[in-house]
Image (tube, rainbow, N blue to C red; front, side, top):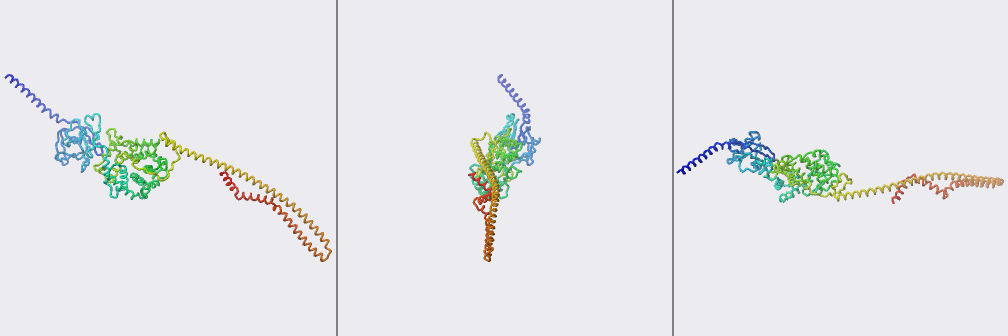
Length: 633
């Protein structure tokens, strides 16, 4: 009995203790349940832009008005109350929810609404893990991180940290592929190709061709698309009088698809580009983009860097680089990097590439991109030209990459920039395909031989020759130097021979002048001798005439007495006397000409006269040519 009573007393004490504990709990639990919790609210908008990343105190209960105007009470630290507090405290401008009956859907934040076809929408995360319940039922605890992301399902959380991990700073949790879906992007391009094989305007058609040329997948639709595109390009050349950049872009298009830019169509695009060269640069001297693309095309068309016009255009392009490393903009800098990387290594080229790279890196934004889809695509191609991996260009804090930026802008249909026009979407997608494939323009364009003879410049800048030259390049330069040396030796020999010939001609001229003087002196002597001879002959003639005259008078005196007959004889003698005088005169005339009738006289006079006439009539030039031929022989 005592035992029983003792047991009863014990049971009563236990019951009393349990009652007291239950009573205490009933007073304490409401206090615990109604306490606020400290959380982190992270909101990531389109393109990976971070709208909110802040600490937030979430109350136990709140009242929210939905899109229909109905008010609903929530309790138990629900995630919807975190948005209510964020709006009330000015962290966000607004948000909207709709009561679907079985759950509440988050329709918009800060005016960013879900797409009508749900291709892009708001998504809920708790501590970096996809939420399995709607915003009205997601319970937040002390130290939790509540995240919202906007984009295609599933959109990666750039900065998703658990409570423990947030102590050491933000980390990256990849829940969505960080790459562009190339196959779906190519399918988007093919789906938007027109029946004639083009993509609408020539601009979009050309860049779509470059993208398809870069694609090396196994899509059958892409194969047929390329064939139709080739036919259109052959039938529709760039018209005469177009911009130089239009010819350059079309040449890139043809070469991307393996079509010869010289003879592959009815227009020689290389010739059209060369017509824009002024001896120093291409097109307008006030811009550099036409020079960049001209060099790109001509390099792939068989023109070497040390050959006109690339030889002259290279320094012109470098002259556009600023101290910051920029060539005028992020786009032009990315394009210049792709072209400069095609030139042989040199001090100038390497320094220009290094400075351009530094500038490009300074333009990368926190989203991983370079301002927009177009610039980001060219930047990725420049990174490929630098022989670097695009993933290595991830931001230090949250590891965002350029390709990640492009992936945020890819829609479910494979194209980029879903909200823009079809033409812009084709353009943006065409830029993105070779970029994410990490192919620069130099990698995409096929190489072709230059049908015209290529003559390398003989000028070799010593500053450009470095230890990095290969043995083959050194041997080639040595051969050029030897050839130039042989040509210099040959020229020296010809010059020496010319000098010797000139000297001999001068000596001959001096001899001819001396002979001329001697001939002139001889002519004077001949004249003196001739006068003396004439005087001597004249004296002899006078003596002969006098003797004849005296003899005639004597005969006349003897016969004068003979009468009539004497007169006759006298007349005859007179005639004989007249004849004698005539004979004497004739003899005198004969004496005047007998000396020049002699062999010596004729030779002497003829020789002197011939030499004089020969010299007066240009004989000096004949002698010069004669002796020049003799020396040459």
